[in-house]
Length: 359
Image (cartoon, rainbow, N blue to C red; front, side, top):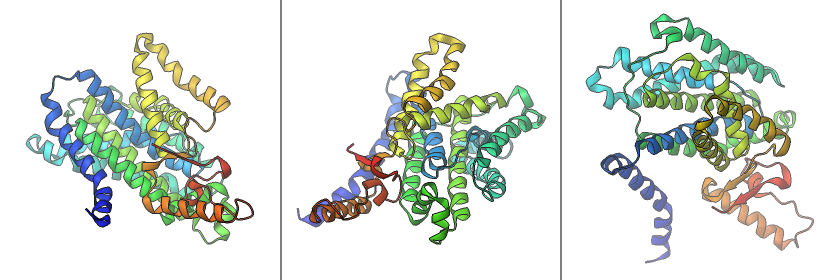
């Protein structure tokens, strides 16, 4: 086999492996005697990965501070549930489930647009205040809409979320975010985090880039809400209050800001930890705000802050990093400006703290 054949295998190998695993989850897993509780926890992990990675795009990569992500999740959950319950015949639920999820994502993005337009006219902590208000407004609005059950919640949702669907959307979320982060727009996002004024001087339309990142994050939060609604089959406004937003923040800062790998690690660690502490009852909910305070004090960048596993960096960016390192070595390691792996990739720079993690 020649070099071209090996390159083809390297290029298509991950896609083939992902397709095989997807087929296994869809067709083989339901036939195996696996523990249903463990499968459900895994699906919670996947949904939380989507929420964490999407919020990380705003809080970690862009440097803004959004604290109402559960509001977008609520919009996605209710929109997808209403679409299925009101307009789709039960016989078509399985076929049109993806349409309902997309509707939830689009609905969340539209709500995000209402927030983004006034928020990104100014700089500073304005976004945090607006998103906090959004979370409270969405929750209060749903509580006062009797058509969707009001404070009692919306029952009768079909259990359409499967491990295969969660796996597919996790891959889609991470794949889209990875390409966005390392695209021209993603470099603009990183530039805004480093110095917004300097980014504007360099010709970056900072408001447009901010809105694109924010709406993308809201879309995937909405899809995650749709998956959540069709997993637990019952939703009520209390499921999407400020405590849920705090949980998502904890997962972001636990795994690490400006890191997709950190989002995966943070979401998996926190979700499994909460399940392991279920015996504590209501006291386990004290853990989330307590963890957030401790993280801010002891490790504000989280476990993998500004670092990335190798598969989360596109091949072309790794080539850029390799050339930068060779150039640096050729210059004797001194004098020549060196792009750190992450900054060369245009995403998580933060000076010398950026690093690539083999994984």
